[in-house]
Image (cartoon, rainbow, N blue to C red):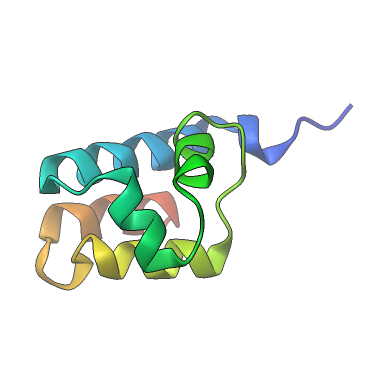
Length: 83
């Protein structure tokens, strides 16, 4: 039986990294939700692995979390995608 991707260890690690980065930057779930035009509850569900992060939401999150100026986050994302 195929395991849902939301339970994949790589996916879990990515979500943990993103959640840690949000906290490190001092950005609330509500602020992120507003910028993504989704509810704070959706951000909470993503971080608790109850809702899958959409690829377009990931793209927006990376911009919000300032990936362009964050070498550590860039490296972690590249590692996740195995580049």
